[in-house]
Structures are given as C-alpha cells and as structure tokens.
Length: 179
Image (cartoon, rainbow, N blue to C red; front, side, top):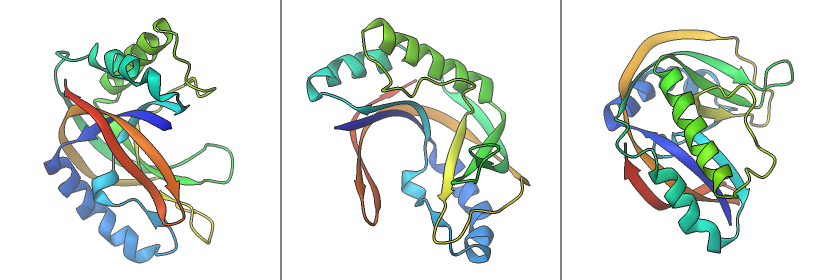
C-alpha cells in the first residue's frame, strides 16, 4: 500500500485558505485543484509499504505526540519543482515553517531508526507546504503570489493510505494523533 504521514490544518485555517484560493480557481480552471478536505502538509512520504510495517510507522508518528500544536501563517503561493516545468502550486509558510520542518525531521529520523526507508524520497531541503493544485491539461504557470496571511493551528497528524485513481487520489486515514 502507498503510505504517507501528514500534518493536518485546523478547520479555521482551511476556511481562510479556501477564501484565498477561490479567485484563483476561477482564473485558472485548467489546474487540478485539491479539494479542501484533502489539504495537508506531507511530512514523510513512504511510498509502497508492506502492511505489516504499519504499526511501526504509527509508532514513529506517535513519538512527536505531546510536542504541542503549531501556529502557522501561510503567506505565498509558489510552484514546484523549482527550475523545471512546474507540476504543483503550493502554499508556503511565513511563520511555523521551521517547526513543521523540525517535526518532519524527527518523524523521518524515527522511521529510519526503526528500519523504514522513505522509498528513495529522503528530503533534501524539505520545504513545508500545502499542495493546493496540480498541473492539469495546460501548463501550471503562475508566478509567486503573495496573499493575505492565512493563520491557524495545526495539531493533528495522520498516517494515510493513498490510492491513485483516474479522478484523483483517494486518501484513507489509517491512524491519527494530536500533537
């Protein structure tokens, strides 16, 4: 099964973010917009994982429980990957990004310590972000765009199963915990 660990935005953050996204959705209907309920920050993408390793992944995620919620401010949209044709439109963070990066680093180290590889997806220069859209039928062209700051709390982690379907990915939460 295809698995990742993610940090979930709180409902208030999602509402404020969606207000910022709506005008872009109208202006760029050819992008494949991520539904509000699927927005998250991927902390560790494990790729294909043997189902028997799932308890170990959950244990690695739970090592950060008690570290406290993260107050973050999203401030700009940018495209990924850098220096190549963009395939992702993402929201970057003005505040809280360092804490999110630290959280991802701890989880990744805990996974490695338990013998779980990230399937070749080790993060060099992790950029905390929320993917808000993907390239559709046309190129994803949008220069970096400042937005009204979107502030909110991130307090819930999840281990997700991801199934790639023709209509887009389907995420199933396998376990969750609060920071």
